[in-house]
Length: 157
Image 1 (cartoon, helix red, strand yellow):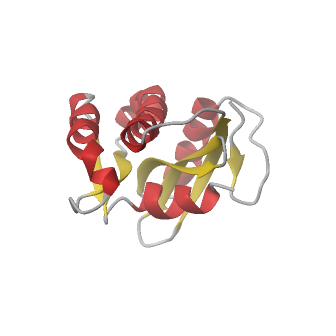
Image 2 (cartoon, rainbow, N blue to C red):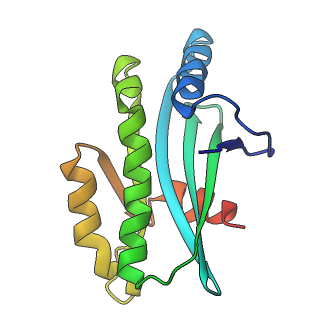
């Protein structure tokens, strides 16, 4: 996996190492962090591009994020694509969760799924919520799911 910063700089180390270094540096400055992880996707012809983000929120001091993009060349039903977005976010959250526990950092998984039944993505809401909560993670859906619906959305090229 090749993660990058918002400015495009590639992250050469494993993401877990970078996240721990980031947490240590922020905590050393006395900054309280919250982390939100989300994924969004966009269909582009025969391909689907996914962007997963790890958003670090600094209490009273802005934030920053790390980004991972991936393209898959196959068609997905919308419900399948929504649940794959959630699975990608959970994969990252699961890899990093011991760090968040170790450093007492609040973490949420954000799903780009609409809570309004009039939207197609709503078909996946119950399964996504069950998946995320079942893994023991805090869950947010639209409109509160900014990591997926705003941050990751902007990173899908």
